Image 1 (cartoon, rainbow, N blue to C red):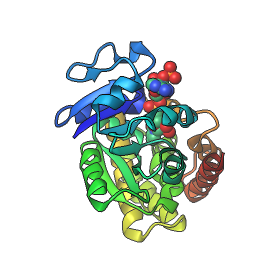
Image 2 (image 1 turned 135 degrees about the vertical axis):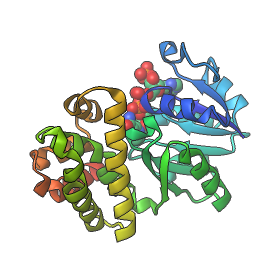
Image 3 (image 1 turned 180 degrees about the vertical axis):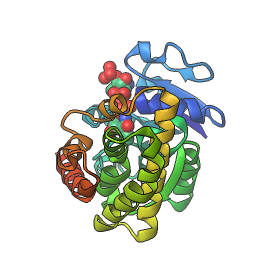
Image 4 (image 1 turned 30 degrees about the vertical axis):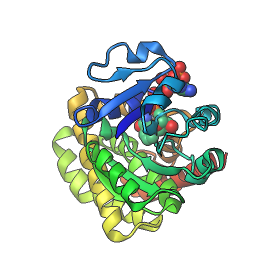
Length: 272
Ligand SMILES: NC(=O)c1ccc[n+]([C@@H]2O[C@H](COP(=O)([O-])OP(=O)(O)OC[C@H]3O[C@@H](n4cnc5c(N)ncnc54)[C@H](OP(=O)(O)O)[C@@H]3O)[C@@H](O)[C@H]2O)c1
């Protein structure tokens, strides 16, 4: 399978760099500076060129860029599988614009950059179980994967998507020597509990909480920066992490509330 990536920003680049070790990767980003240095990946000059050479396409563009790109993608019949990682864009939104196409939706979190992400995956109406397991194989290269029902995708955004921002905020107030104990005894149990309150089973919630905590710490160690700076990087203005942080107020006791507020924000953004 030849894999195309549309958009080579934070997530597209993280995916391309990891997937190129196993797959043939093609990429197009309208900002040519982003694809200047990407050894081992074929850089295309347009979405049309990309759609002509790939049979699976990862949409790693912002939600607001979807409508226009889907119009172009619709013209390319040979494009077999569409994989979207955009927050708040449903499989039915994509199917409504592309017709009976196999669509898979995935929600990675930022630690995917260092191969320790938590990635939840769901399939659209026309995708098969074989498509789903193929995509799960792709995302296994970026961290741990979990197949969930699509109705849980906003909850995924609130727990594993915003979780890194919550953790960075909380450890920022704690001496470094106490981080491990805090994460094991406070953060993970409370994030797991919050996950169960927003719809996950106990087992799913534990996986999401543990993987999010571990991945966030690996990202922190490997990025050689502070928790405060990483917190700012993972907090987009008006997004779910920002909303959750306003409820968290730097206190782990507020984690469940923070997750609920992030979920509400994710649902609002999805409705837009
Ligand atoms: N960052 C995360 O942690 C994270 C986690 C989970 C999911 N996501 C999802 O991943 C997607 C990408 O996020 P990101 O943070 O990687 O965004 P990003 O850094 O802004 O990257 C998107 C890239 O796509 C380019 N682009 C936009 N429209 C295009 C088009 N029609 N053709 C070609 N290139 C196009 C953008 O160029 P310009 O800058 O010139 O517009 C930009 O370089 C979003 O939908 C987001 O919801 C992100």
